[in-house]
Image 1 (cartoon, rainbow, N blue to C red):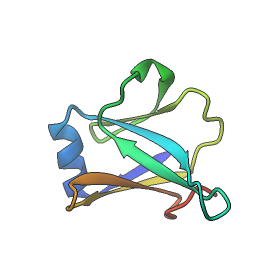
Image 2: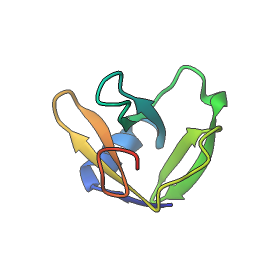
Image 3: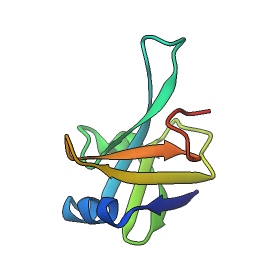
Image 4: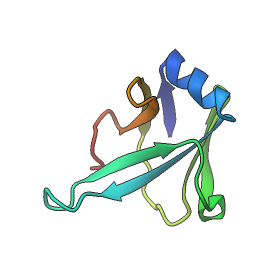
Length: 94
């Protein structure tokens, strides 16, 4: 998996420890559309495995996640200040 991150996203991730936990979340509406959740902290990191280490960012995914994107895009959102992750350039997981 190739990680493509904006400078602003890299800075926030580094500021918060350099690790990003990325998981798939399923919406209750829209036919169960799947999107990504990206967090710098999770309650139980034991359920995650390292998927990529690139440019000072360690990306961790749930241990049960079998299929990985070819490319993971990371951007900073200002309000609220958080990281947004995109699966192969899409807002949803295909």
